[in-house]
Length: 122
Image (cartoon, rainbow, N blue to C red; front, side):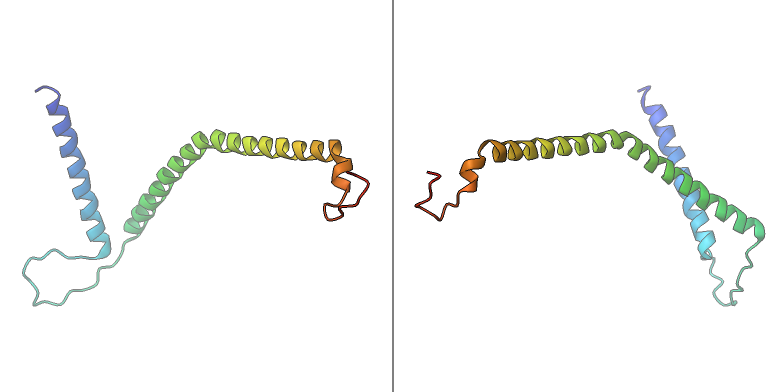
């Protein structure tokens, strides 16, 4: 049962981080804890410059992390996209070449109209 201990510690760490994140979100959104004091009016909290700075720092960190993940996905998938593009380009090139060679080699029969049965091309 040795491998279960690191997994339990990782789960505890993850749930603690999730709890802290939820607490931070509730604090930012202005939710007050229910302490039973609903009789007194709630005064709006004043946002401090340090709070704004930490919120902007968190937003910029989230954007940087999401941006780096997106960059890595694009970096790994770009060769596949380029390869498929070259494959389609090659298939189109071969298709056009076969059409051009068919037009060159079979030019006399292509010049005759199929509607004219009495043409000298037959």
